[in-house]
Amino acid sequence: MIVINEKYGVVLDPDTLTVGVSRPGFYKVNLGPIEDQITVLESAVDDLLNCLDPTSGFKLSQPNREGALSNAGFMTFFMLGITFAVLAVAIVFIALGGGV
Image 1 (cartoon, rainbow, N blue to C red):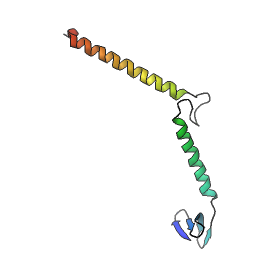
Image 2: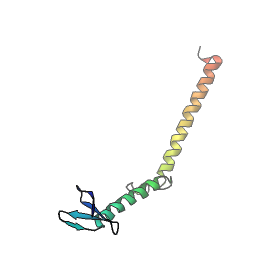
Image 3: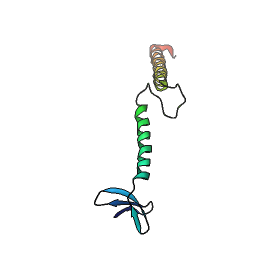
Image 4: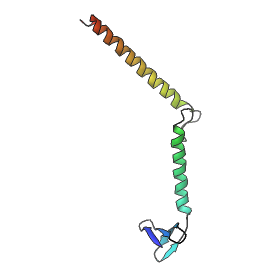
């Protein structure tokens, strides 16, 4: 057995390339705890990938919040457009002599 991490008791069986749990003087190849953590990581990755779709929602969000990301993005860029348009008009007025 190859010890991967002594603190957490993780070992590797070089013959089968299976990761397992170890105790002092005893090595047991068991993937249960590691598979549980992989399941948690896969669900987190799925949630992150779902965030890329603006019509979906987060796993832990309130019900009926699908599309909130799309609405938030629209409102953000709408307000940025208004802000830059007002700024451009103000610069044109100042350039024409309105800021005497």
